[in-house]
Image 1 (cartoon, rainbow, N blue to C red):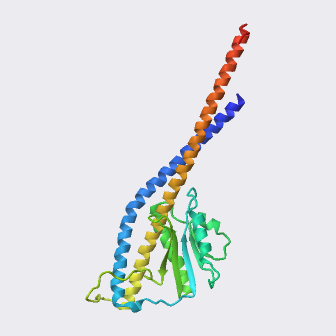
Image 2 (image 1 turned 90 degrees about the vertical axis):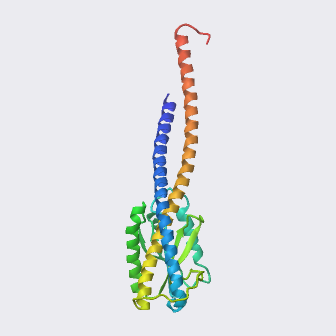
Image 3 (image 1 turned 90 degrees about the horizontal axis):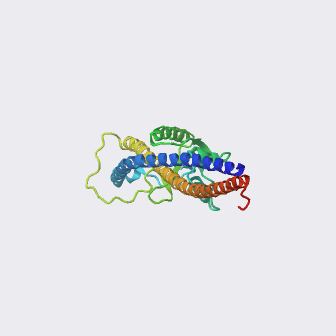
Amino acid sequence: MTQRSELERHRLSLGEIREIMNSMKTLAYMESRKLERVLATQHAIVAQTNAMAQYLLSFHPELLHGQALPTRIYLVVGSERGFCGDYNSSLLRYLDGLTTPATVSAPSLIIIGHKLATRLEGDARVLASIDGANVVEEIGAVLHQVVAILLEQQTRNRVMSLSVLYHDVQSGTILEKGLLPPFQDLSPPTLHYPHAPILNLSLEQFFAEFLEQALFFLLNEVLSTALMAESQQRIQHLEGALQDIDKKLQHLNQLSNRMRQEEITEEIEVILLSSGYTDV
């Protein structure tokens, strides 16, 4: 009886864990659906911004500077919470690959996400770390913190190279995207306009303000994409864990039923023996 009681407690405990994990999976699924709508708009905004940049730069290519920059900084978007498989481990492996024998110096890192920051605690490469977003509504606050850190770094290092590492939803891989110098990843324009843009501001002032807005839109898209990838990996990870729990619960149910049948058989034998029926 004691053994079956222990088994029942274990089965009930697993059942409670399953309910919690299933709730977490449901929340991650709901967040993914919200992000789908948000990302559709953000993709369109970034695409339009890039088209405007191509138009402007086709007439003013001197706005871009292709020289090598002494200070390399990587913005790395990890996860704020756990239960998302190797989401952070894959980012760490990618970071290790950035340092090769031909590399002059290891890049400095700005970490987004508590779980990834914990893995890199004490790492000399980390300049700063901030908490990431749990839901899409928190992305704006994270973005403002990122901008504040970048402005601080720009004050210290007037000339710096900035790239971002994050999980991409569509390709299912880690993407490395250059942010500064700006628009280095743009392909040549597909449309050739006959007239240069007419500006009400000086070219330098317009480009500075345009670049600020373009970086804001791009970082917003990156953070939303990374959160979407995190939610999807959490769904997959929890789904696999739930399947394992269901198998264990099924086994425990079968074991409990078998033990209960044995107990009933023993009780029947005791009753028969106490009634004088010895041939059992």
